Image (cartoon, rainbow, N blue to C red; front, top):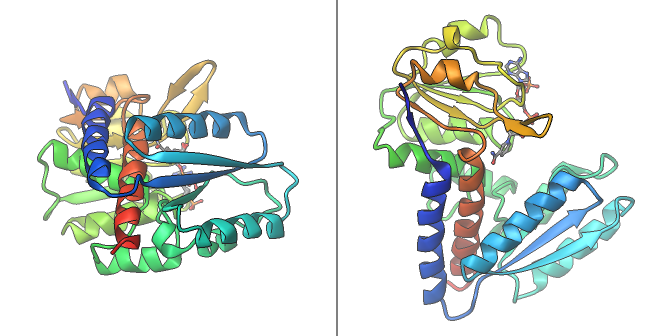
Length: 279
Ligand code: NAP
């Protein structure tokens, strides 16, 4: 039976470390969150982020815009926060209403305040392995989870299912930088199971319930389930958890796995951003 990688527990330790580090700074780090529209899930996520900031000695402010806000209005808000010396991190809560240009937003947040790690410069710095890169929170959190089980990726075959800019692509890069052999799968991958069965570490970030069944997993593999899917009033991942847990060596639950680590890494990035801005 697989051991569970407890994201809640790990995130708690991580948040305590961040809180201690934030206390050593002369000025309290400050995260500004922009929320556009009325998406209930986004409101919940923003609320969770505010709560986590409070507990970690990080100041937070939420800037709300109506769903019909224009690109110019959003850009003006970002410009103001970019030049506000009292703000260290800026996060634009995704998804944005469809009339807004997400890629333009990624480039508009000042790279030093880009705690989501989506700015092209941060992506470049991450690819080149520079320590001052602000790295996307979910992939960074997953790398910390692998560290926590003392599982060096060097020489291992990491299979990432999903290639989004937010999770799959940066995760594939981080695994490569950690000397793993990496396969990235996506919607057009033929015979997905052929690849997933080869994985020493299988990371699934798709958003499809039970996409990964037990017959698609190598016995002893480490399985990280990033997916969050709402089924009725329950949150489930992309992996058939009960069946896969019988043969994997480690597995992350949903909820209580990757999610809490994403928020912990957001706090870490905010503190790092404050340090970068203060030299
Ligand atoms: P996304 O942007 O929708 O990307 C999904 C990826 O899955 C795409 O690359 C897509 O391929 C691929 N895909 C779709 N169907 C597939 C299939 N049948 N076989 C193989 N690949 C397939 O989603 P995302 O933002 O990366 O998020 C993925 C999941 O993780 C979602 O459930 C999301 O809610 C969750 N998530 C959780 C956290 C957390 O903190 N827990 C954070 C972020 C995301 P193409 O590129 O070819 O379309």
